[in-house]
Structures are given as C-alpha cells and as structure tokens.
Length: 86
Image (cartoon, rainbow, N blue to C red):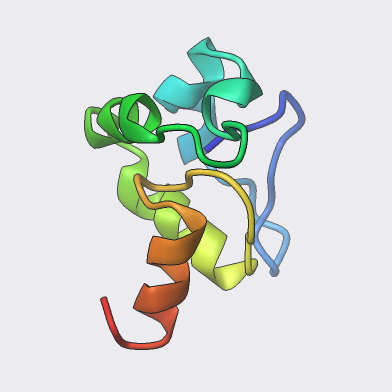
C-alpha cells in the first residue's frame, strides 16, 4: 500500500498512526502498483512483514481502494473478500 507523506485521517478526523511506520513508506509507489499482468509477490511479502498490514487492509476496504496492493491483498483479492468469497 503506497502511502503519501501527508497525514491520513479517519472519517471522524483522527489521524491514522499506521502510515507513519508502514514499510511501504520506504519504497516507491510503483512497487505496490505494478503494471497489468506483473507480479505482486514482492509487495505482498513486504506487507506480510509490516505491523500496519491489518490496519492498511481495513483502510483499503473502508475506502474502496480499487488499485494496487493494500494490506497484502491485490485488487481481485480485496474484491473477493468484500464479496464474502475470500
């Protein structure tokens, strides 16, 4: 999940803490948004080692993030999870 350097906030205005320590902040966004048909394996491995993975996935699901790897899941995997098929 590629985060930006500006603070992210919850719907009620609280600042999210997980983006500050997320491992994705140490690599470029292209790592989490590979070209169509490219592997997402490396991004998922990095997510697997990140303390913020669960919070990142919850954020992506709550904000209907449709592109890239978030919380260790690809677009298709998040869609299946939301549909109750994951």
